[in-house]
Image 1 (cartoon, rainbow, N blue to C red):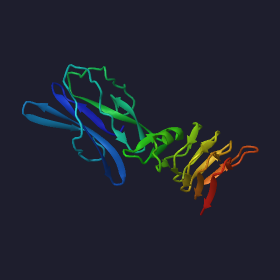
Image 2: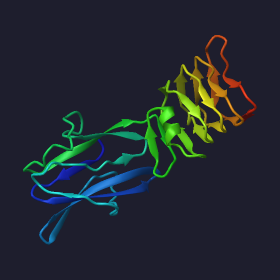
Image 3: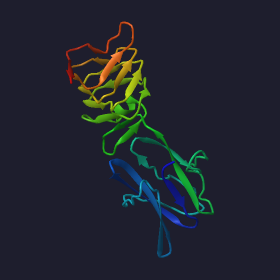
Image 4: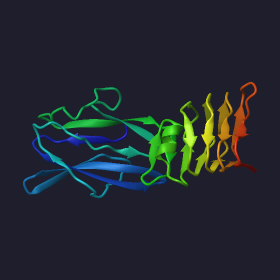
Length: 231
């Protein structure tokens, strides 16, 4: 896993969080600072080689349960929890106790299918989750080829940047607002791929929207909305 958190025995720890960007990649870094007497020792959750600034804090001490541990956010990945090993190992829980020796826990991740350019960004596994997380005017970027049959009903203006990847579906994407597809990837569906149910405009700008379903259509306009094809 990327990132680690070390809890030192007989010391309280304080959690800090801050979102930052390095070489085009966004992270939310978390680190702990340990206090003993007048001295201060720091143990970082390393994401790249960046030291982050203090945003919020919470303190616990040796012998107590861990409580709520820091939750790092990595651009394009879903955080799966803290584990005792970089690969495999046992997931730790908030009810586990701080051990009487220095202990290192490792962050485990799963690559997300989508990221939404909200502030802070949101990583999701389904398009429906991405639409829910999006604001009016947000862009959802597809991060990898995926099969996604979540129920999608879009009622806010959204851009889906297919980013060279294909979303394979067996259910339609319904929209009543403006929906733009950009990027060199697209949608491959066995149903009607995209259905305009309202007064919004579906804009296809470089993406491929296709269906392989018998009697189905790539784009269906059911109301007074518009469809625009751009090169």
